[in-house]
Image (tube, rainbow, N blue to C red; front, side):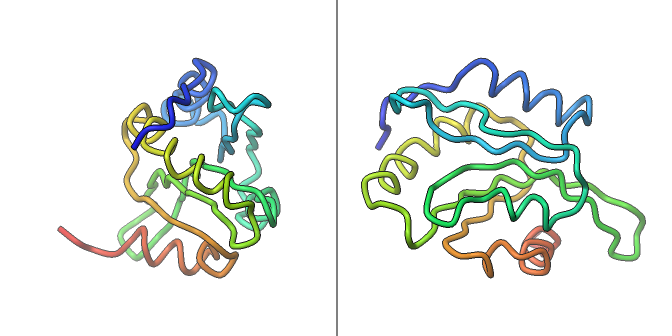
Length: 138
């Protein structure tokens, strides 16, 4: 089911800046004030994962792209994570709109390695995210 919400061109441009230009460590996306378009809410170059977590509101939904860098003994690797943040305390209507709009955003962002769903901070904690991102499923 699609919500009819569009993806702003700035979303695609900012994603390319992160993916190709490494100009951002993460991007947080939200909805425009009139709920018709997915827009960039925030970008940051801070490499501290805790800084990223602090940007996720306790009771509002967001999407994010995080450029995860890790070393599991085979050298430094990077994976782009697509994070859907839908906290338990968010309003039901907002959760439904974000859920139905997710696919439009996800399809427009090419090159995502791992998808993470979070309803509370434990689900998006660094250790949890690292474990999901590095799980070998191939």
